[in-house]
Image 1: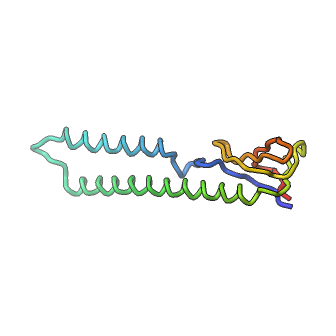
Image 2: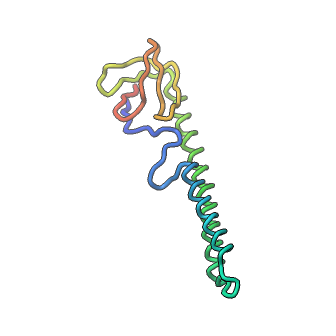
Image 3: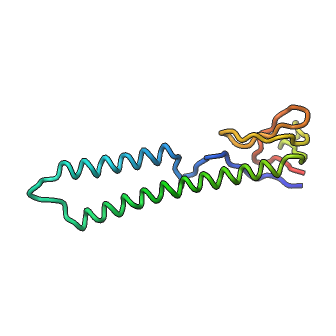
Length: 132
């Protein structure tokens, strides 16, 4: 018998990972600021080359962070799908024991995995769900 401590939703985020839309917003904002700074610099006092290289390095880091977040999202999706595949045919019980049955299929929703049981009922797989 296994008790699930917590199952995250596909594409869920924490404080350390950004959603693709939030990452794109930060990325776009950074690009706009950099371009605006270049467009409005005083031609008689061009930007210090060291500062410019530092900004380009920051730009590169932002790009790498976005790529890393996309890979983490793909890994989380794969993990959720593996969990779903392993639950088919197993017995699950809700934390309050009001819903129980054999898992026929698992659907991944925005909120997390949802098991469809043999009797047609559904159970959100999350904290406290018992898997036999």
